Length: 100
Image: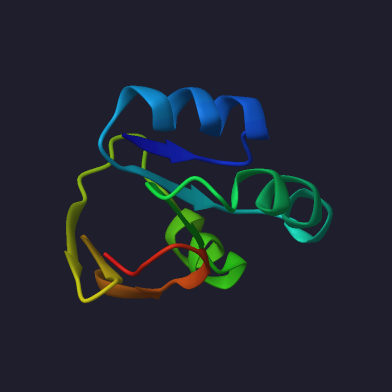
């Protein structure tokens, strides 16, 4: 199961009970969210949470066309996004769980 954004602890718990592994790509201003949600879900063994750096999102969003074609590859915990402008490397910051 893959979630994106800043879901609450109840949502992550719900997801973790229904899947073998739950991964969250969190973005935005995470300081308050992280302080509230991470402690509530830290005992869920199948939940992995990574933060996506804001700078990377801004680069991808810059001059975004109406129709988007991305190729996405994940290797060793790093996401590679290829679009018409080239390849963008996304180094994730792991907040909970294992790199995967």
